[in-house]
Image (cartoon, rainbow, N blue to C red; front, side):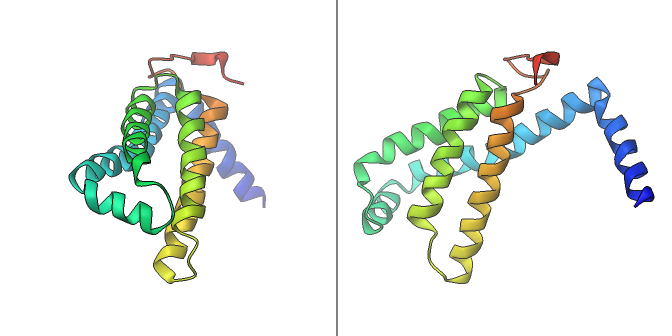
Length: 145
């Protein structure tokens, strides 16, 4: 156990360096935002099919423009670190709702998608708590809890 404590302390020391910390938070925001940006863009290109799938799953197809706006707008806000906490919270709620609406099937791929959505929700909640970091439009620096 001592080995792991020392290793954890070493990692904590490395990521505490402002440049490393800022770069990791920026990378995390970019990785998390990418799924929303790609998904929102693809929904535009597959508008009718996406709308039909939504209706098949019992969700009004008329909500699709709002979904696209949330994915693209929220993804861009998260990427830029603009109103990060609010964007992350909105995307977390959206992702959790989407998990239960679209991925609750016991079929293997849907179960994986459900778990992916839960994991994304966890990451988004972390951004809700910790904000966007120094390399963000929010520039929260050391004001994070």
